[in-house]
Image (tube, rainbow, N blue to C red; front, top):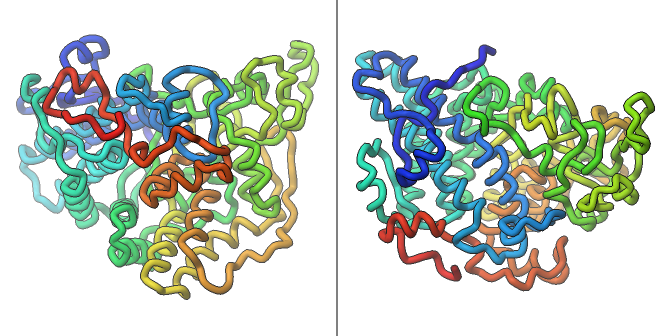
Length: 518
């Protein structure tokens, strides 16, 4: 695949103030007459997607915030803004929020410019609309994150060229934002192709899959089921399937050949600004582990209960968690590093190294395909994949009383998780996972709790768990004394959404009132 060099990173104006734009230039307005061909529309779409791979969005700030907000990851460092996220003491001045809020709107602004510019391209709609549909999908993708994170948010669906107008916007009720998201995804579903050259390009299946997830979040069970099963029943047409080996999903060398990802963020073929790199590997990596450019930063670390309560016969545990690390005891690169079990990880001498298994999904296959301190990656991260669509169908089926369908869909995911007989590679120490002694199939009546638990394990550390906790309002349970992280006394129902960033409120009082509890 060729490397796309993004010239116009923004092609629009975000709702940030002028001072922000001066501190970090992010692009220029598309000049009059810029949009002449569908290639120009594609350039704008590509620019919109570069914001998603930025360190301020999925490259670190948002992805790590979602991990810390969940019940599976704790914090090994002591940086205030991360502590606030982890302990539910978040302030409106939190530095993580104040960075991924404007970055999201920059992506939206670029998508808006692509949509508006498409009107100037004088070609047949059959040629133009499939490209424009990528912009509609991208805008929906960003707003879906925003509305789940903040509730009522400003909704911008056209380019804004007046900074004064940008700083006088008010917030749209969340229910209306969802209606707009659905409309964008419906347009995308109508015009996007069945198959694409890269899973980083939105497809018809991507639009349907996100519609299914949006409807699931809105508790519109029949619509969620219909959209999910539309993808499942047409998997052959869409060139989709479960990958036969779970670890392939986290191996940059082979992931592009997998049929499981439906939509992914492309960290390999988009070149943007210096902050468009992936820091998930170092943020989750083990301090001192020689396999990943000198190791990670031990920031987002699972609790021990995540490991000990995970069925050892579940192949996904071996893939998702790293219970062995290699350390260079004598600091001599000419002597082999020594492998240590997780009970001795603090031998590295780093104050933040913890004696627990670490997240392995982003560091299991080291250089050159996934890098830690090098702050770059060749890995394209799945935002939604076929396994999740199966679980969306299962959850909706439970709510609709269709137990046979729920069993069918959830057991397809469980069967792979318990296939066993696989040799783990890329982890420095090869481990062969024996075939599971536990039956793969659930029997009897499937419950919502069954599906949520399967989602927790299948999609662990992929930015999904917090959204599940929030949409199902189960925080008081999972953050109670019996939760995986123990009691989190600061949690309350107002924590299901985050505060509007303080600096945004100062620039635009129309965004008031602040979200409850902040």
